[in-house]
Amino acid sequence: MSHNIILDGHVGLKPDLQNITVLGSTGSIGKSTLDVVARHPDKYQIYALTAYQQDELLFEQCTRFKPRFAVMLDEQAYQRLALRISTAGLKTEVLCGVAALEQVSAAAEVNAVMAAIVGAAGLRPTLAAARAGKRILLANKETLVMAGRIFMDAIRQSGSVLLPIDSEHNAIFQALPDQYSGDLSASGVSKILLTASGGPFRNTSLADLQQVTPDQACAHPNWRMGRKISVDSATMMNKGLEVIEAHWLFNAPADAIQVVVHPQSVIHSMVQYVDGSVLAQLGNPDMRTPIAYGLAYPARINAGVAPLDLFKIARLDFVAPDFERFPCLMLAYRALRAGGTAPALMNAANEVAVDAFLTKRIAFLDIPRLIGDVLDKLPHVAVNVLDDVLLADAQARVAAQDWIARL
Ligand code: NAD
Ligand code: MG
Image (cartoon, rainbow, N blue to C red):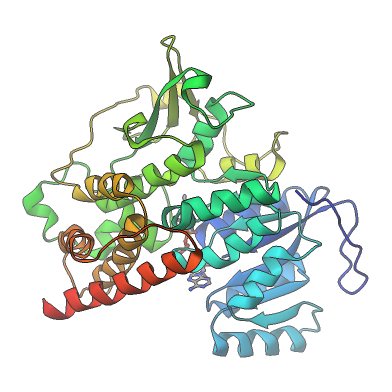
């Protein structure tokens, strides 16, 4: 990880603070990250903030955090933000486009990058941070699902410190030995127990799942999240993506990753050892805990999270997942076992399907049908270079759109 902080007189970056780039600062994870950063002005300062098209919110964030750079993806939103920033006399430089995202992820002054863009759009800037050797706080699980080998190789080659922010993977990271070598059995680990809330439809019958609406799908019982991951939680594709994420992060084979439905979302995941020990990490369902962990690792800082009240929680339940009502989970295991570009195909088909569901073009149960058909139809090949992944992603999007058009 790079420690060279450059004092920049232009926007007054202080030399003794960690410079943070927040990719996707207007999203759910982005806002929680800024909440934690704001609690520790003696430790962190914002180097760059980025968003897709929410120029109003990004402007407010710039006013408050005075970053050196702000990046908008959307050209018109970029024009609006640039005007607001100059009218307000802020010194933040406004940039536009994917290359700018890569630039603020890899810049020499940056110490840590919060990767919190949603979906495949997060891949390029997150990879740029990995290649530049930054500390990476990884929320964007799609990067690992699409390009796990390429990303993990980049981390190893650059010496990046990779900290999982997904609450389950953060829990597993905390429950593994300090010097975990990447070899589960050498560490005495027999299984990773990946907990799942079961989402808003945990108790909904298969017949009723056919009629559910986007708003019902986005009403998660325990977490407030962006709409894409909320639908993923409702289909349990989120847990499927997380199985693949765990595979890459911890070098765990599919058979060593077991999904456990735990409706309270208090245990964020567990590691089971050969001696019978099971280590768990518990906490209120609040993403500021893993975010603070990632920012301060190996130290601990206040995250603004209320202490866990075990008496109020009183009980913790565990049940096996239902693969019949939630076939997306099985599709993800299938894609992981198939390897190569299969997870990237699945991820892209899922993104198209979720968008179509959110815009009411397909029904909830069409999501797994669409993904299964795309996985059956398209060949999956080995991943050697990034273009293999990007090609698979593009092909799956076309096939998924065709599927919807034929409905
Ligand atoms: P969100 O929809 O709330 O925010 C997404 C952010 O990405 C926004 O800032 C948006 O402007 C930006 N963005 C969207 N499309 C973009 C594009 N094409 N190019 C550049 N920027 C773009 O999403 P979220 O819930 O914060 O989730 C972000 C990531 O973190 C996802 O990968 C999700 O799976 C993961 N994650 C989220 C949570 C959670 O609690 N929200 C938990 C675990 C993991
Ligand atoms: Mg999670």
